[in-house]
Image (cartoon, rainbow, N blue to C red; front, side, top):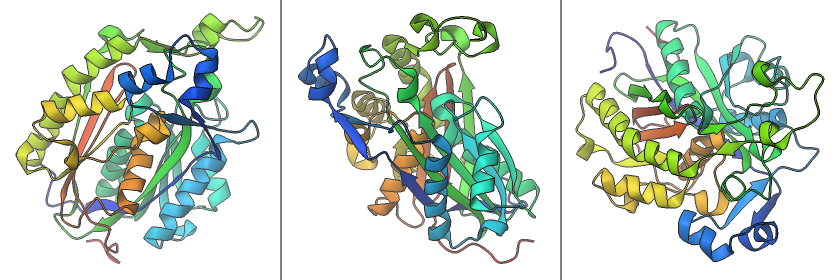
Length: 342
């Protein structure tokens, strides 16, 4: 359970940004050996968003952060930390978060990027919350999930093209009254399927210096069956662990926001946890799998649509390549932050 002697931290603003263009199954299947009906039956996904060639990950990150800051009524100079959760930033380095700091004018913010694949945003919220609780001088943090996954996939590969999309979501964290906000976090890694979802090209083991483009290396590879098995095995256990650490029974949870990987997977997980779909919000049918941005975008839309009630117990949960799992329990509040922290 969260240490009651440390300040409480909660989400006080959210936002998201999506590309202008979306691709439906009918259009996608012109280059695939599957049908639109098959995609819908197996994944529940009807379309996915694709960034334009001139779009940048940093501009999406900044757009979503500005929305979240406007909701939180936080000024750039008051931001003490920016965490960008991504595996598809514009550069290998410098970090995307530095560009976000520059564009926001958040001159007092510490920055770093966090790479935990699709569980990145949930992980980033926990890391930022921990930082704010041990150093109360960090009054506000911006945590962003942003991905341009479609830049790294073969649009003719049904293992990846039917799922992945682009976009960004953000949350502003602030200090709140005792007992509110984040209650606990739990993590798990099962690296036995380390090679099942990967992008090797551009890494130091497969550097692109001096070699021609090779689609077998330079585009994303994904084993969907391995992903499914990992998710149904470890994500429920990680959620239960987080609830146990928070001192709450799983049955007390009011709402879940999952990584939007596959609608059928979410339906299975909800049933396995003993709930029905009224306890969660999904947007994967219309948005697809936006990687580290997935939970962030879903959270932003769920807030906009009034699904998260003040005082509710909310679980955020994600699974990413590695495989790594992240879950956190929150006593939900979007109220104003404290002006002073003891």
